[in-house]
Length: 491
Image (cartoon, rainbow, N blue to C red; front, side, top):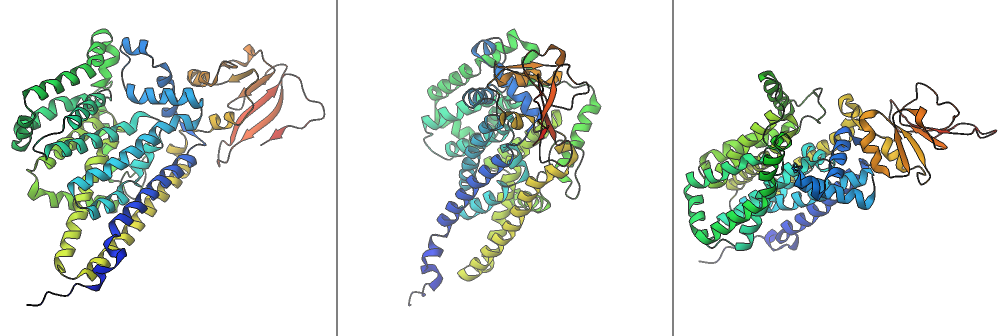
């Protein structure tokens, strides 16, 4: 019997290397998107980023020894960034952007471990430009760690659990990442969850047996050494370290309100709530694909990967109820459900034409067109919504970027609100940060808001404005002696 003739399309170079081409395009697009998102956000910072910069500046070996260990890994990176680049929006946001790039890379590898390359490419194309990921990537806060650590733990776990001889290096990296993640609030809850999963699931039990008693003892010892500062912190500074486990909970209504806020963040698709977080985190199209993923994974729900995914989904629910800002922990489980949904859709489509490559190409083109529409809408929403949603815009502070554009090498008195004094003191020793202009001593006086009382002996010299529709007056600059025949400059 003659061998069936191979379809012409299978011989095409473009068809044979289509996944490699898509991966290169995806990588370039991902890096470009992060760079564009970073530079578009450099004109402002949020109150949370200001607080994060202050907390990071306080971090030192002495403070760690005294129990100041919450979010220590991220704070160390941000502290280093500010020391090198100075107090600028770039220095505050740069650690998050770099960690987001690492997260996106390993997310693609993780999905490719669970599914085929085409599913990994399409899923990454959909979830990386999502609002929740871009907002976290451009936020100079430890929020990115709540995505990075789960991605690394899942990827390393998938590399280890499927092998007969677990790699000692990967095992050490898994324990290291797991231990470092415990410095992020609420991630210590994973410590009892993982052993429980290993005990209750036969595949994971087999993996533990393959490690052997010696390797397992070394790994447990390594983990104990890395989390020792946390143990010490609970002994010497329990009041501060307890925030690794629980926030300040006033009453049961507090938890109910948090639950409603989380539900709104995940389900409101046509309107925005009065929240400081962009909503919805995932559009209705991605949510529907994730629901398909839930249905598609039900037959394989007893598999180890989906047991772990279910456990982490429950972890995301608990942490976000304790603190609504931790709603970002839903990113990874929902991304994996979207991957399962994409895999189901492609499998069903391919099953209709098992030997004909042309419908596969047509289906792929249709999926790429749909993905382009989803990505475009998400990206446009992310870039434009903060300028039109008052609750988001009200959090943005444009003064730091405006200050960085001024000549601050000479001695300057900076008049700020009392709640911002610690932050602006990070600008340098040549800038005296005051809350009362009566204590001013230098020839140059800068107000971050319009002064209610004009400082005695000073003359308004310049007003620095921004591009915002409201509250565009950012800086009021006064000089000690008036400049003759010179008008006030408004820039």
